Length: 64
Image (cartoon, rainbow, N blue to C red):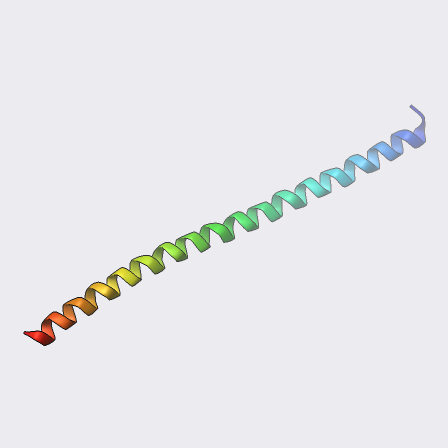
C-alpha cells in the first residue's frame, strides 16, 4: 500500500474508534435513563395502589 492509502486508512480507523466509543457512551446513558424511568413507573403504580387502599380504609372508618 502507498503511504497515502495507509494514512487514509489509519485516519478512518481512528475516526471509527471515536464513533464507536461515543456510541457506547450514549448507549450507557440511554440505558440508565430507561432503567430509571421503568423504576419510576413501577413505584408510581405501587403508590397509586397504596393510596387507593388507604382511601378505602378511610371510607370504612368514616362509615363506622
